[in-house]
Image 1 (spheres, rainbow, N blue to C red):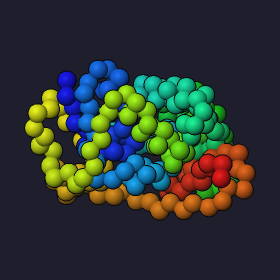
Image 2 (image 1 turned 30 degrees about the vertical axis):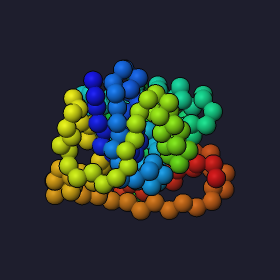
Image 3 (image 1 turned 180 degrees about the vertical axis):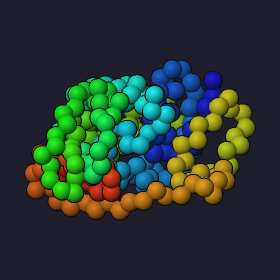
Image 4 (image 1 turned 90 degrees about the horizontal axis):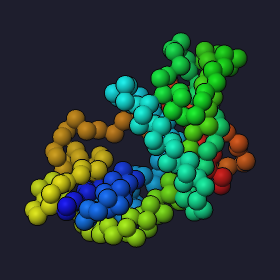
Length: 211
């Protein structure tokens, strides 16, 4: 089977790698090298934030967490399991995916404006390390990469097209409902933080990557 993956970020390269490992002939078409994609500045904390459908989220999360914890044992991947706290400003039940991240403790001694915190130790990925590692692994699996502006999803001579264009899908599909969600990421020196922290309701966070 011949497959084209459009987009060379973490989603595109992950799809390409898995498909190549299963015997497909895969080509990634991307306008940017991995180090120039949005994935390079992603926070990298692995848990299902507002993911749907909820009845499938737990299984997806369990598979992803197991794989990333396996990768944490390999040198050079940029993956670690790091403890931290998910702070919440409203009373909600412990999520259904709690078991999928390997256990969770609910704390109520957090102080205002939060009502509780969920403590767990998910994988935390330094994407600036992980993305080059992933690109090299995909290449070793036989994935070809073609650089250049992608005009459309119409690709002759292939059996399947995977759209991993991210925000680029706004013009590529086209679909004007695709817009950036939000976010500004600031990189600062890490003074030696041993845990991450996320405010789930206004989505501010601090994620320590060791430097």
